[in-house]
Image (cartoon, rainbow, N blue to C red; front, top):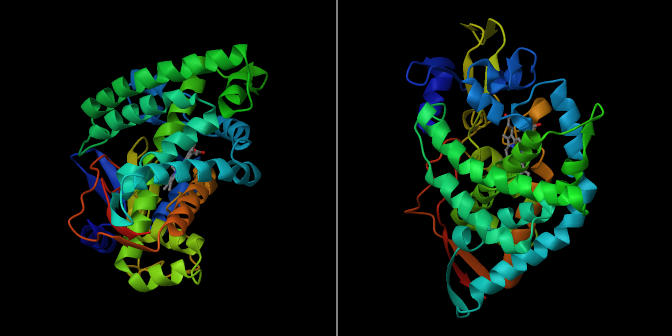
Length: 381
Ligand code: HEM
């Protein structure tokens, strides 16, 4: 897909795809223009989607426009401040340690494990469970639900069949989340679900659908994306033994590696918007009420923005689009960075060498996601 992105950036940077009825945007500058102008480019699917699907999205922060977006985001941001994320770090560490202990318990001092299946796929689900204050005994249920979710694939994410099968998977999860919220209403705890269950905007409590959808959004936005970042980072280190060695010797910051992976192997490849009015993007006039697919994975490889974009370079100063841009900038960015750093640290502590496979790998085919299905890693302890 990368050669196609390059060709599109050069030849048709704003391209109407008849098949999906969407305008596809490939250049960094055009994507940045759109993401930073929410009045012209709405996130509300209500503009083009059937009403029954739109109702279902109510409260899902990523699909809400200003002014409500700002109020909802302010409310939820209190759970994602850098201080709270720091406080969560020891719990994330203990989850990572337990997962790795379990992975290594039956394996000898040398061998192979699956960095995705054994660690990276599970950890983000457990962490979101912690954040929301869900019972530990429900973790397996959450993982199974996520499995169902990623088994659904589609060439066209806006196709009705895809949306409908996705919705049926989400319904069960929604009911579960709402039940959890009810319990917190009766007996609040020190967790995000309790905060949501008691939160008010303009003197009104969030309605059930808003609570449910936000809780579901966390699990869908915060899971496989983080799995992808971790897997893509280990793969990047596997491909560059020199960086791996320098990283192991503390000569390279984990944070710098993660940032370049977010650009170079963008875990979440596209976001969408809707035009509220006729507008010019690049040289292309786009009518109102049109669906836009913004290929951030292409923007991140745009040679107009990044020198030598296909090369992995630590410490670039230009800003990548891996977490989006503007008012919808990923709320979980610091959490995702922290989780990934902690896992990599624990992995480095528990092994003396790590050699991720770099060939014969397969990826999830769910839309928008650039995530390995499994990543065999040879290790020595
Ligand atoms: C939004 C990527 C991890 C929660 C976004 C957006 C991107 C993104 C690109 C912007 C969507 C848009 O503009 O339409 C990622 C990546 C992650 C990650 C690559 C991991 C490496 C997380 C985590 C959480 C999270 C761990 C929470 C547990 C959210 C939320 C939004 C969001 C709530 C919506 C923010 C808003 O609309 O104001 N994410 N995300 N994400 N992300 Fe993440």
